[in-house]
Image (cartoon, rainbow, N blue to C red; front, side):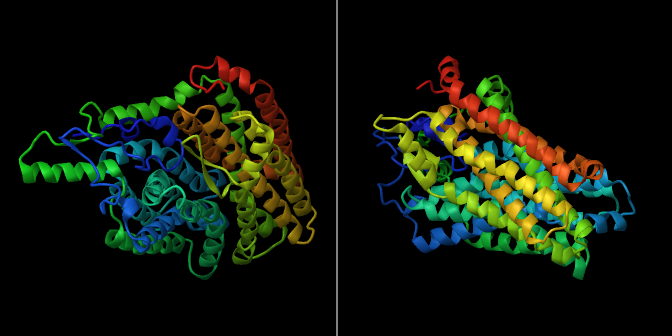
Length: 512
């Protein structure tokens, strides 16, 4: 029997909760008076993940966080090693070599469209464990590639497997903790996707220098296999509909009562219907003018961010003549930038029974604009996008021209850190605005943003070498900065002036 929408069963709109990476929390279950309904045995039921011991919950949180770190880490790990890969595979086609790096983003971006609905039917843990096995298999095979074509195909499949912890990991962590407890746990979980792209190239650079580029993949596979073993030993299903479904199945067998069911059982809810919904929802939401503006801004920003991350080693190897390992240490600056920018959004809060990500500065600005009004409007979130939008071109100008003129190595690193801080502030600002503006259909809106940004994250790094060859490091990054500066003026300004009007006319947006 398929599982009915859990949020709908307890009076919570699925689009609101599934917009964030933690789809279902299982809190505030309605009291079930129907005799044949199987639910928790009271608020202290030991089967409820939120009632598990703190030690067990932290153990599971750390394991899932390790999965979430290894996947993004793998995406950028080969960035400093592209010239070694090209030489080893006997190719001078640098377009194909860049494709090896960026194709991973295509797999990791579109994987959740398939894996998320599967987890709603079969639970979070099976998807996480099987996805990681798939990841280990193809990541290991990457190290045995005999030509560029094989490596590209294997990297795409690796990215698909690596999307599992990003598709279900946040939901699993949130299943374990009450809202007032989960802030620190989710902060640790989200640190992986932020720090992985910065840590990966450092590890990859030194492995390539001391061993071979093939060992980049094998080291990650070994680490991932170790985490898989820990997960097999210590992870248990946390998704309430799956747990209660198994409980109902056991009770039907023990009592002989075939009418026993859970609130979430729905014979009409099939995997095919879930997949169909996940695939078509981005196209429906793309008709919204607000989503079109946000999608373009998010896509261009995401594409430029990964263009810079993937070509970052070229500056240190070609302009500063640093070794692969030493040059990769400069990625520390990207990690610092991401971390500083993320501090604005690191805290979690509850507003109007809808879980939202928002940090101290974000909430402070929001409350100040709201004043004495009982509720604010989504456009107040635009205020925080403005400083991030200003930091983006400033960081790129500093990074580009200080690198062009071979200034002290600290100067380009300062520029890249400023850029990364602005990038994460804008990305989180766009997501928060989207959730506020499309509260009921937020999952669909976020899916639209993610689909387009995955495409640009995949394609933008492909033209980077030709751009830098023609324009140089200074003008190349200046071109990117001017594009972001134009969008920084147009998009926030448009949303601030016309966002409320467009929401009132929209059938999907909240018009308040």
